[in-house]
Length: 284
Image (cartoon, rainbow, N blue to C red; front, side):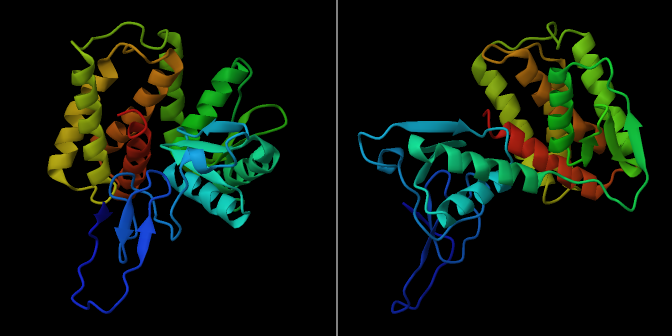
């Protein structure tokens, strides 16, 4: 079914369709973003997985749920430009096995292109990472990336950030260290069923989606506060592993902190709301 993004009374004017590369929804001319996925539209209809290669060609998949929507769209454009047949099943990419090497290179290009970089004009703060495991450093890097905080690890393996981001980095470190020290929230409140959990996460997603565009939406602020405060206290739900649930809670809490700041910054709220929305939409 074509989504009606624009009405026209000119019956003779051809209507150009646009598509969501991720879910395949078709839109009339004038739409720029998928209502369901929140991603920019493309001018070519996406392929179904069974259209990628011939029936006897093996396929492989890439799980890109951790990527932001913009990164997946960038990869989709690169694949299209390179003439590589591909399909999306939600946030999972399907390609021919024969194209794996070339796709790996494009994936790496997108990852490098979307990483925030340090400001050479600023002073930098260095955090010693001596006692951190490689897995913990990876989680910290992913968390800072989700928060849009530029960072690098130097030759000694220590974390380097812009000095202006130091307060946000300190907060991220405190939360991650607390989560690690407490065993990733193995204890906490539990919900009666999966529907209740899904409703809670959906409420947080809906509120974050509104706050990314309007950080002063009072109703959305209250809705997010109510949902996030419960999410922070939840034990690991069935179907989630410790690291996954810990990362979700950290992302949710980052926006909660911004909303509860004594002097809320609209730009920070908007940025963190987008991160929270992108993370939550992957699991609801």
